[in-house]
Image (cartoon, rainbow, N blue to C red; front, side, top):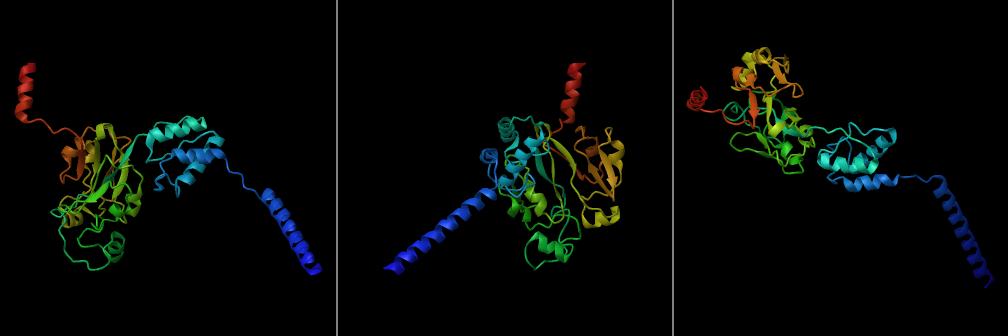
Length: 290
């Protein structure tokens, strides 16, 4: 009987000492988490897409709270939630945010099946990453879309699909959140996030081929040849030509579309603009005005 009593006392003493040690350790090594982090996390959409630059919404919430403590959350933005969600977050944290212009994913490749026919048959793993690692792909262009749909698989919002007729990905502007997942998935960086523009209107060079003009033309009939006509025509200095390729700075572009008219290869695309009026209609309007 004495042995049982001693055993109970010893075990009880060990348990008491262990409890005291655990209590002291929990107090000494406790990690404080600002309750605002959980509140901000609840406001975020929970997509965990990584478009904000963090691994998930939890990391974004932590960064927003730390930014608020430092006096600014500028540069932090949730592409999925947009202005509405960021406005709620700013109100919660007592901060002001600059209104950023919405962006959308843009496919900068004009190499449709008609413009850029296949010259070989690829029989390996059917992903853009694998095909790109093997070489130029199935066409002569080593810069254009590979057509395997890695961008489609990366999009969590069903905003991008492959067009079977052109062999190129197409972005649904209404669904696109500009999270950037497709841009990261593309091994050739043909997908770019650009300003959505007023009424969704944008002007961009739909080509990333950096080969010299003659080589680029052999690979694709609609490739940019770096002739520089668009650069000379732009009155706003929005276009630069480097490495045999033209690029339009969307921050400077005023959507005048003069570059579209002078491009000999039709490599510059103007999106969501109204169709030009027929010549007869223009003449009639001028006669009425006269």
